[in-house]
Length: 315
Image (cartoon, rainbow, N blue to C red; front, side, top):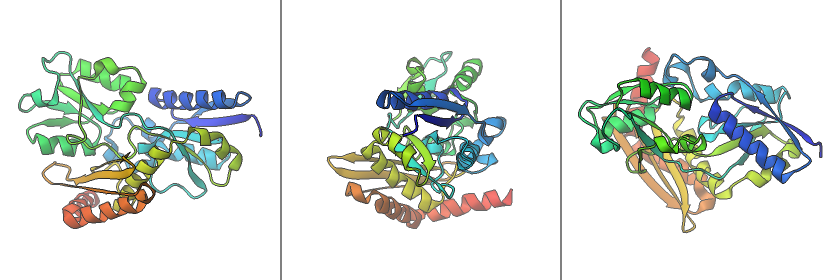
């Protein structure tokens, strides 16, 4: 085995944390392996003044890195699984999915305000989030809320919250924990309150297909339960053809050797939400995800998605 491996990564603090973690795990497992990190800027990193839903699809944070891999400039890439499109470019595949961190979202109250929990928010409160999925669920629970868009890395977002008159912000718990901002969390939202994004909390390593040398290095990082759970979520998303611009939430997990999947499709204004669940054998997580997607479409999800896409096409 060659003893050098180049990992591609975005330059954000969270992306670097994730890539450094994978590098450390690789070097611990393979002491003779030298791992180098190469930073690559993606479209999503360059355009910071527009909401994600306005700039394009889910390849926003991956396309340039994937091209570098296809050009043999890097050997593998570390992503947040939720940023990785369900259809990968030809010639690439997922080499490993690491053990999932807590997949829930958290509420971070503005320290200048007197409350800690989401349910304590006063009428017409302002909440910051960059996600249409969160916006839909927030407005469904509280139609009176004012939702503002916020972009940038975690430090930037928290600084914007502190400088603003916003009442709070919703973020993924995994990122907040990984970067050591646990003390800023004022409430962890339950899955009933807020279903996460597909793949939230999990790290994925993307590699070239049939590159068995590289694949072998990442096998020890692979978590089978996380793989099964997120495979079901991604099958659901693939069937619904969801990108950043469609509010879809899903959470899969294995409980007592049974695969459980909850999912929803929501309108952007939160007025309509179709939610469902399914369970079955862990080895059937993919067909179960697809089956739940079909069920959601039949129960009103299709009308919601058609309405969102019609609005988008009209812009």
